[in-house]
Length: 84
Image 1 (cartoon, helix red, strand yellow):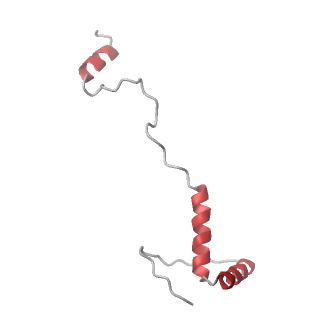
Image 2 (cartoon, rainbow, N blue to C red; image 1 turned 180 degrees about the vertical axis):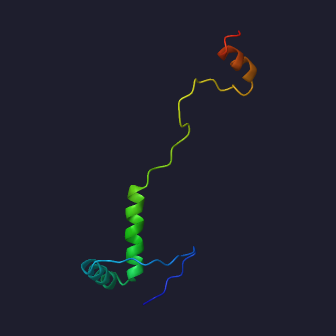
Image 3 (cartoon, rainbow, N blue to C red; image 1 turned 30 degrees about the vertical axis):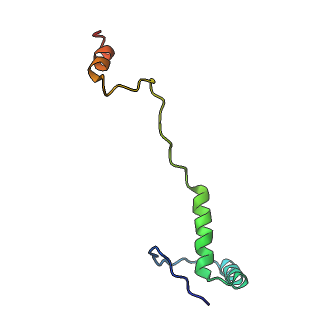
């Protein structure tokens, strides 16, 4: 079996599998000429990507449309407190 070297670090973990699932992974690995670890990694990658929520896009909320608040902060605060 060929060894694959990864450009990113890997961490070892142990997983307990039912015999039937382990048998299916073994058969699939032989059919695809891949390691069982590669089969499991790909399955977990697909599973977790499908369930990962997308990151929120900016803007996270809809503002007033005023874009120069930082430049006119004193006026904006005075207006907000009814001093204009």
